[in-house]
Image (tube, rainbow, N blue to C red; front, side, top):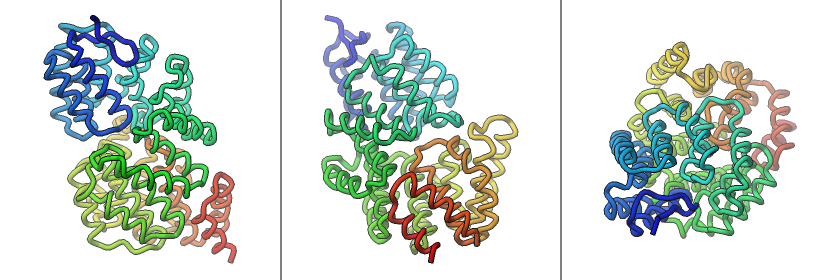
Length: 438
């Protein structure tokens, strides 16, 4: 009997054990749930020539920044699928392999063409969709809209599938249609609660609509069911720490950081562990709360091991935060020089906004608030090109706002606060606005 994936596509394996393990592994990856590696290893043990299980295992290695393993597994998957694979499987393997080789533009092109032919290939569908997906890291200024367009284009192929609803809802939330996005994501969560991506997407919707208490309650009730080895454990905790900051409780935010986010306790891949830690500590300091020096030093050591050179723009922005906050100005100058070189060679996807933000963060750390605001204000609308989510990128707007307040730009600070408060309720912004009025 022929084997298929959960979406009905044929699989080039005659082992139902391998097929079942592969289906389980894919679902675990789509839900950011622990156990995917073990599932794919079971599939490979049952059928060592099963190319899709190899490329899936390569993808996990890539996410965890193990590039050598990822590329070796991808090369093997290419060889195996060439010997025994359908047209869909060959395209599937090639699309994922390109991304792991750093050819993200080609990977995105392939993914979009692949989905026109095989729209129910969920493993490929997810590649452009996330905060760290191919759209977000493409340098596009309209990647939020691009995700919505792609999801809506293929919605008829998925119906009420929990995976698809998760990404459809999150895409609408990120694109500003927050109520609609939250409702869709809630449906996804109700269909599968063992789905960290749905909880994450709900946390984003609650951030965007100002219902931090709902996010806190959701995470408090759900997180104990999620093993600490889960991909999103630290990042979902980061969202809860943001709620604590909103409520004016820096002690709780630091406690969450110590318990679940700091490098020595998290199992998150570097793109999460470095950026979550750096952005939370920067917010604490920028809002006027003390951050112990050893806490910054630990975060800096982890960051420097993880991203010693420029090349991942979203990480580069957060490396600037760490370097500026810890006084590593020579290292930051070197990173900015690397970014400028990439820019001059046409190899910096976000463009000039990235080195400009890095310089502004250094100015802020040196308490040159007027200089910081002068750098950030003209590029604020272009920060979207760096990638990540709106909640993550808002750290730049927060820095600009504090620079306005500390640099004597009261009118500009009040105008920005008014725009933010018009968009969503915020206890923190309300406190700041009252202070500005007083």
